[in-house]
Length: 40
Image (cartoon, rainbow, N blue to C red; front, side, top):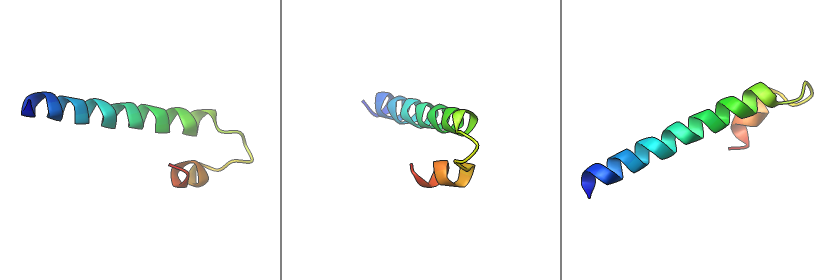
């Protein structure tokens, strides 16, 4: 169970980083990267 929990936490963290990276890449010009990071 502990190993699965660690894997699950890593998966969610990795997924969140991908989502954050995607938001930074896809943000319109009027929406700064700092605002995108602060919104999460």
